Image (cartoon, rainbow, N blue to C red; front, side):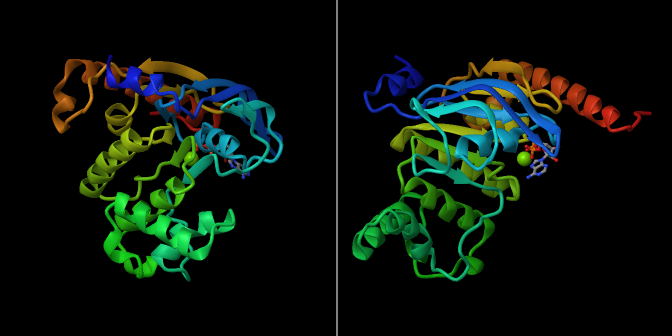
Length: 273
Ligand SMILES: Nc1ncnc2c1ncn2[C@@H]1O[C@H](COP(=O)(O)OP(=O)(O)O)[C@@H](O)[C@H]1O
Ligand SMILES: [Mg+2]
C-alpha cells in the first residue's frame, strides 16, 4: 500500500471537505460561482489559479469567514456555519498577537477552549518543539524571522488538532531557502499528525512538490479547470524537478494559468501586445 492509501485507511482519518455549488459574491461581483470541490481525508490539495480568481475566498468559506455563501460546505459531514477548531488557518501574514510571547500565542487556542493555564502551556511547548522552536518560547514574535513566525503560526493552528489545515500562500513571503525548509517541515507534520491540507499557492513548483492533487481555478469567478493527480512518489526530493512527469504537469499548469491570467486581464479592459 502506498503512503497515501495508508493514510486514507487510518481509522482516525479526518478532514473530508465537501464544497457543493458554492457561490460567493462581493458587492454584486461573483468571486466564486457554483464551485464543486472535494478533499478526501488525509489528502494534500493545492489550489492554483490567476490572481483574483477566488482561491482565498474558497479557503475562507471552508474556514467559515464568508458571511453569505450560497451552496454548502461540510467538513467531516458537518456543515460549516462559522469558524471552528476543527479547521486551522495559516495566512501569508503571520498574524500573531504581537503583545503575547510565542508560547502564549500557541497556548491561546487551548485557553479559549477552557484548558487550564498550565495544561495549555505544556501543550504549547510540545507543539513548539514539533516545529523546531522549543528554544524561543519566551520571545516576542517581532524578534523572530519570517520563517520562524510562520512556524509559530503553524504550531498555533495544529495545537487544536484540526481535521483540516487551511493555508493561504503561507510561504509566499519567505526566501527560497526558508521556503524549502518550511515545505519539508510541513510534509513531516502532515505525516505525523494526519488530517487533510488545503493549500493555496501561486507557485506551480511548490504545488507539485507538496500536493496529492493540484486544482487549478479559472479566472474569476473561479471554477475548477483542472483536477490533476500528482503521480510523483514521496518523498519528493529537490531533483523531482528533473522528473519528466513533473515537467509535463508543470507545463500543463503554466499554460492554463497563463491563458486564464490573459483572459482576466483582457476582461478588465487590458490588451496584450
Ligand atoms: N472582502 C472582500 N470584499 C470585496 N471583494 C473581495 C473581498 N475578498 C475578495 N474580493 C474579490 O473577490 C475576487 C476573488 O478574490 P480572492 O478570493 O482574494 O482571489 P485570489 O485569492 O485567487 O487572488 C477578487 O475580485 C477580489 O477583489
Ligand atoms: Mg488570495
